[in-house]
View 1: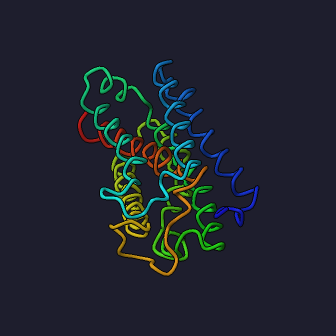
View 2 (view 1 turned 180 degrees about the vertical axis):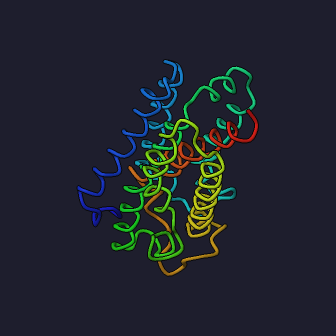
View 3 (view 1 turned 45 degrees about the horizontal axis):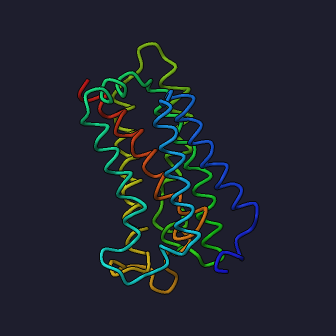
Length: 225
């Protein structure tokens, strides 16, 4: 099996990170029962598809990898266009939309561990072109030293969200272009194959959309509300 080289600790760390992210949505964002059930089903479907080798087929057009990411992006688009969900988003505190980004620290640790066993390219780690760990490390700093002030500087929060969103988009593009699909343009010697497998399929299908949502929600509140 291709992921036999991945330690139990790394698998567990990523699963715990995913569960933590789900609980943040349920407890801190007070997700409705229907949304909670939908998310659990989504995680289960993605796990099953990965276990069955659905994403390992490399030569399809469009790449099957799109089915891990695109439905979540469409759901986010819906949330930002539906009247009720926009009102809900505007009630989420900046603190909650900031602290969730700490999940990017264990994610980066996991990616580096996967790189050491040749399951993702160096480009996708903090030793390569992935500086997304900055978002995770600075999130608690923004939380405690900016948002804890009664009249905090919104320009700092705005700049931080824009910077971290760009870092997220950079690694997302690298990950897509490094995967062994017809879209691959990078990392031919050591492609991005870990995310085709369980539990790491939850990175593009769940964790990335969640942190993307958190940035977009914060930016909406800062720029539009």
